[in-house]
Length: 181
Image (cartoon, rainbow, N blue to C red; front, side):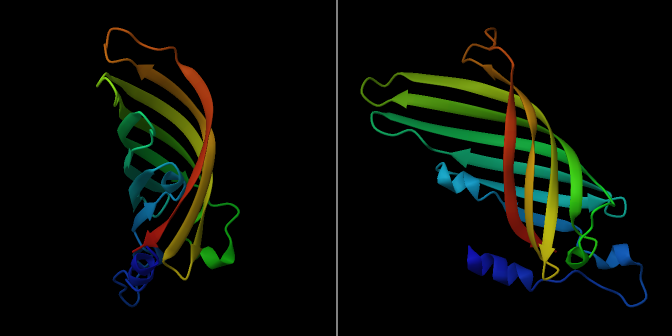
């Protein structure tokens, strides 16, 4: 993974002499969420800046296999976020490609749990919407670290779509490490 980041860090965006600052900044980000590895999963995010780096769209795809013992499980998830980048509290080394943001995000996941002894299976769908705030730190013009936290409203739908679980509020937190290009 370190080799991936080092090789991507060498990538540069096209920079023409005499253009404005926005055209010289990286417009894309590919990142991983390191916390997912601790839970037997992986999440990869792709992000694209718009409107002079004031707005960005994030698309996420993840998977996990976490059950142990007599059970097996797998999950697949997807998400999308819109980030609004604030022009306050900019650190000098961020080079206008990072800083604070607020975001709205929607996520969906499908989970399946299998009892290995008798083959019984149970599945559920989880839908969530969240409001988040975070800060992107940019190092060496291309390496990003982005912690974020917020609050989510989540609802589980059992294997039967006519039976819905109760919505619940929860804190969400996490972060990504990746490369701008």
